[in-house]
Length: 300
Image (cartoon, rainbow, N blue to C red):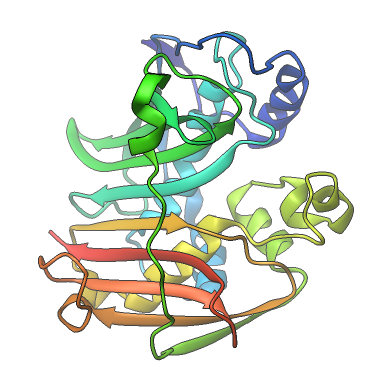
C-alpha cells in the first residue's frame, strides 16, 4: 500500500503515460505490480460546482448524492496513477476500454470525507492480447460505499495464462438486433470536450479530430463512460435506488457528431437478460444495427 496525500490530476498522468507507453512493447509474458494506492481523506466539500456541472451535462437531477458516474470520475485519476507506473507492464496509450462494473453500496453525499484506494488485478488472456482490471474503492467512515472495476485490453500483449485463456476470455458475441428505441441522442462535435471538462479526461481521441485520426478513427469519438453515465441518469435515482449495481460493455465507438438510438427496458421485458430485476440499456447507431454499448442497472 502506497499512501498519497491527495488525488492526482489527470493532465500530468496522461503526459507520463504517453511518455511511458513508448517503452512498453509487446514481447514476453507480462506481470502486474503488487501495489495499491490509497488517499486517506478526500474532502468532497469543495466539489459542489463540479457536481452541478456533471449533473447538468449528464442529465442527473440536482442532489447532494454523488451518482456512480461521478464517483467514477473522482476515483479515475488514482486508477490511472497505477497504470502510468514504470513497472505497470501495459501502455496507457492504445488501451481499449472493454467494460465496467460498479456497485454503490450506500449513498455518498457531498461534504463527506472519503478514503479512496486503487489497484490493478487479474491480468488474463484475451483473443486479441491481454486484459486487466483496474479496481477503485471508496469508503466512508470505514464502510465500503462504492467499488468500481474497469476492464481494459492491451492488444498484442501476453498474459501469464495466455495458453488457452484467449479462447474463453472474450468469446465471439452472438448476433444482435436493435430493440424498439426509447430515446435518441444527438451528440454534437463538442460532446467529447464537454465531458472532458467535467471528467478531466482530455484524451485527444475524444476532443480532437486530428488526435482521433492518429489512432485510426475518422473523427473524434465519445467517451464510453459519458454514454454509460447518461444511460444511468436516464434510469434515474428513483428506479435505481440508494444501492445499485451499474454495468456497461462497450462494442463500437460513437463517432462525433453522431446520433445514437437508446433503449432502456425493465429486465422482465428482455428475454435473454438476467432475472434479478432492474433495467437493461442498449445504444446503437441510429438507423443501423451498429451496437455501441449495453448495460444494466440493478437495485441491490
